Image (cartoon, rainbow, N blue to C red; front, side, top):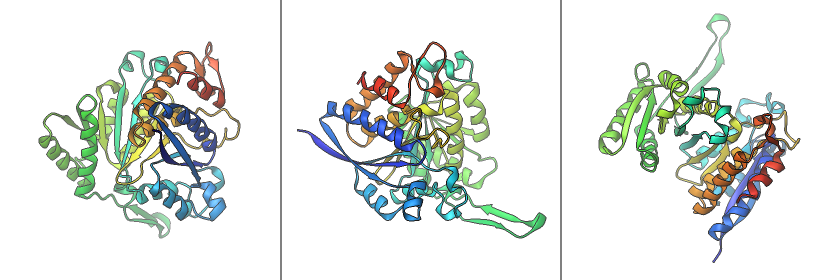
Length: 357
């Protein structure tokens, strides 16, 4: 008997509509393998919502997300909203959704497909076995701490942001990292700046407690600056990296560059409520509406959605395998095109993946 799952689709801004439409086609084809059908519910967030409602995250969007089985998001933001008040910037939609849905953890896999190893800026011998996951804390730390906008004048003009972490916030993100590592190679690298920051010293203390309580997991500890260096010197050493909101934001983008293309990397934000899935790239307003955006990051995010939220593991496996086969067959959008490959637009890449589902 077929099951129906409800997914809120938030196109967002820029290329969001194009890449979400591509992912929806792939998901609809793949979930039949698990006897599932998708009821898609479209809602607005980001700049599109500012234009329509005067705010980046309408209450009706939050309500729909709270009752859905999953949320698939394209991207938000664009230069046309650069001058709006800080309190209603498009990016506030993402922070608001994380908070409303209790999404305290971001999972960012970094895997280099064999067909794309030569796209990495690193030497070929360094990227043979790159396959790690960054587990980033999402709702604590400096992004959600107290702050003061610039005040005063001249050399005494001042602005500040406060980094705060509670024990429960660190404990629950460590639990996710341990659960993730247990399903992979059993190794965690906890990243902090405990030699300088008080919040990092609490972070490391709790990480060490969790390591002691889970001896089957191999946990080591690195300062964030050393981690940034190790990601380009020897990225293959990592299995699961767990870190704070700020450090995770920075390191996950570095990991994306190591992979060779921002356009291919997915992410999942999980927690106590409905999980949200989105590619890690931005809204790319310069190519919006031209039909040339790379949809693979969104398609792979949708594969994660199938696996973690829709109970559709066959669909998830099929999507990931189809993406790999399409790349092996030489299909490339413009951002990853090289001579000798088969250049395709957004629809062409989507069709290429579909043929292998």
